[in-house]
Amino acid sequence: MTALGRMPTYLGMPAFPDAARRAVADSQLRRNLTHATTAIRAKRAGAVAELDDWEALRQAAKAIKDHTLANLGTYLLRLEENVTKAGGHVHWARDAAEANAIVTGLVRAAGADRVVKVKSMATQETGLNEALEAAGVTAVETDLAELIVQLGHDRPSHILVPAIHKNRAEIGGLFRTAMPDAPAGLTDDPPRLTAAARAHLRQAFLSAEVGISGANFAVADTGSLVVVESEGNGRMCLTLPRTLISVVGVEKVLPSWRDLEVFLALLPRSSTAERMNPYTTIWSGVTPGDGPSEFHLVLLDNGRTATLADRVGRQALRCIRCSACLNACPVYERAGGHAYGSPYPGPIGAILSPQLRGTGSAVDASLPFASSLCGACYEVCPVAINIPEALVHLRARAVEDHKRYSERTVFQLSGYVLSSPRRLAAAQRAASFGRHLAGRSGRIRRLPPPLSGWTDTRDAPAPPPESFRAWWARTRGSAGRGGQAGRGGQAGPGSRPGGAAG
Picture: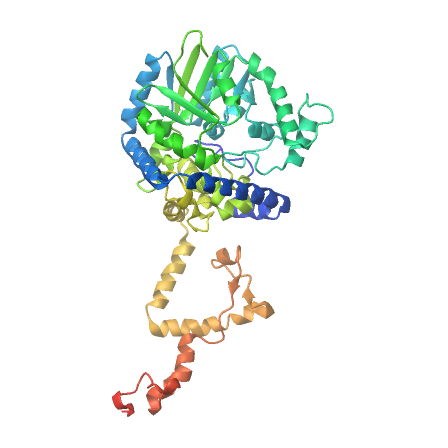
């Protein structure tokens, strides 16, 4: 757990640079990631290009989210009122521990020792599965990719495609060894793997007394919850069990149905490159004889209120978990999601996790630096989150929080040198001796602290044997002193009009 105790850090995870170095060394992982992200990017680009008003939709979504966040208390109270009117129960959770305790208590009250789950980032954030296991309750992930991760005792590495780091050969081997009812002779053919998963989950759907979900959106005006998905497992979890528990971040609320329309146009195209999701399930409380007879909504803060107070950082709360930024990010494509040490990987995780968890751990302090600041994430974000801006903002906070006096000292020294032409010239002459550190390669691979922060992850080019200032003085300086024209027949820097020397 982190110092703030809000969201679990993956146990044993090092800071991003170390974790990424290990991941990049795995050639199979890089091939899997490159193949998947390239395909998703291309499909998304085609789906987005179909809409002439994409940018207008994007700006509308941004405006809706900003308005909602600015009036979050009002809309959350309205949501609570309407969920209660529709027969549901609303619970408020300040942090992960409180959310897990509420859900565990509700499962016990239902007399269940087994639950089925819809893919949910909020419950990954709180570590709900581990909390339920500690209470003697088995949580069955029913999303295909989440099932793959669960069978492999693994961690998700992508928001939309949790098993993106696995190829079908690896998945086939996992099913044959870890799925007890896998059919004999199961091959790596995707339809056969999907059929095996469907058969494996069927009994769990039919026997579960409790279903647990998150929600993509919550509509304040009607108290309605919305889940969009592509496999149908969500529909089964949301309608078959007698008790349904939904854990939802407070930022997921929208004011009205009209606002929801904008996001249902943006989300599927940005995430799965579909015009609309195959399954969009919307429910309001409970209805006798139709679906669950008991519904509980757990509204999760877990650092969101603190994030909302940050003028720059709060834009991360606009996120609709489409994962477009992950698929566009060159850093994610090479390092994968596990290197981020958080349920939220990629560019959005690099700005969301340090705000929800704080920058007290080495993992969280390193995340804002896990970017090239190329801006590709901002370009594809359907709610116009300026991730590069937030990254720079959080980098400054991480430096301040960790009292990196060495960095401060380097910049102060640089300012001192650059403020004087004489000191700059002396520094340039001294730098020329750095060529002796480079050797034959022409690169400086190791520098002492604090400059080692640069060479730990990249090579520094060797300084030239002569600075521009020294070259100018050597090749042009005589023109000013001797009155001779410079190269090309033009007067030197010290000459007077007419070419006569003083």
